[in-house]
Length: 360
Ligand code: ZN
Image 1 (cartoon, rainbow, N blue to C red):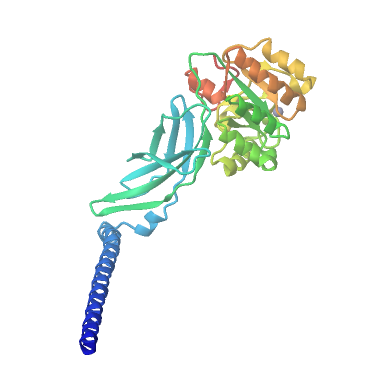
Image 2: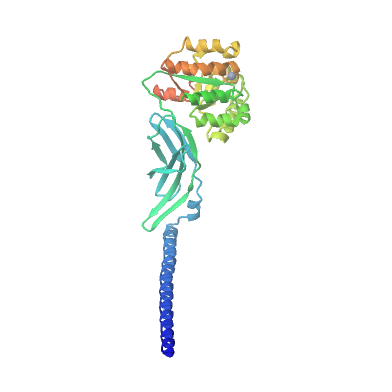
């Protein structure tokens, strides 16, 4: 009997061993299938780009220069939204446009286009948007992506072209009160034009960048605040170009407009500056009175649709006046826009070398 039990135990043990071996065998083969699949998948994924590389080299495409293409994105706001323009990348079949609203976590693909221009008409007033773009080569085998462009960030403000509007303009800055003026513009969703001195730009980089981010306009008030009428052509050009260069280093483009110091213009100046020349029709005389209440009254007592109002953001009194002028103008139904927006809404095409004191 004992022998029988012993034999039975041995049989049971060998049975269990067989089952165990079978399980191990099954597991190993399952794992190997999985591993095979995995290794099959990887070369398959690689094959896509290999194919593109092969096909592309047949078409003489330099893949590396595509992948490393430097895409420079710039953005302009207009009546319907933002217009994006970016570097055209050779051989790309399309461009992908990504956007996020400030404080959102990730970017969203909002559209594709075959050209190096895109118009986003879905912007909402008061929102700040961040954009980036990349180029794509799409082929049957798959697609190849370039790197992303620079990020461009801007606040969108919508204006009603049928309502009255004015342009607040600030000369001689940026200065230590510019930030407070900008915060007020931001709070009320309005724009202004800053005719900056090239010599001040480096000192107030963040003010220039913030102006641009808010959708304000940066004009040139020359580099050294000189009478342009007393200068030679060469000297005038130097004043304009030096200022443009310092602005461009911060916002990607130079001044869009010029306001000659003291409003002093002659034929030589008009022919040489190569930008629209903007003077004013409402002089607040803020620099002479240094009084917030007088500056406020000088605006509010005579303001009308299409005015270009002159102020200086380097005075504390002007800053204090602006904090009251902006809500007061809004209350009166005025939209506060940049000079270029005023021209756009009033359908006036600003011409280089021409002088505008108002845009009605
Ligand atoms: Zn000035």
